[in-house]
Image 1: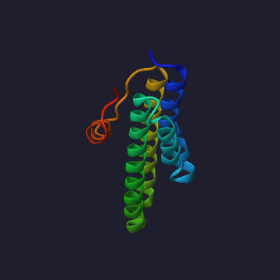
Image 2: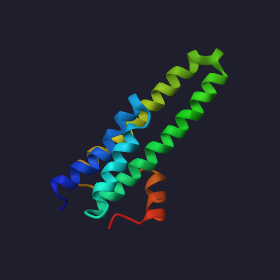
Image 3: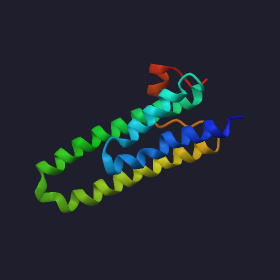
Length: 125
């Protein structure tokens, strides 16, 4: 059974993606701080925080590419804005689901990102 502290830290690592929507990099920085504080205390929290970091940085890169596409095709902005808004909302909801799962003490792995983090940095246990 995971402690309340572990569940809170893992949930925050995922849930603080909301900071990225205002600052661009607030979410990955918060997840990095959570990882730094917990990397020697709990492998589970460290794994969840690393996933959050990779997921949020990947989203930042995707956002930059989409922004460049939107800028390059500015005459189609009326089509791009709703598409990018819906994608942003979907990514936020997915991270929120991860936060909820962690708060419940369940293992959570993002699609692709979880396997990548497990292969590069080790698994949860």
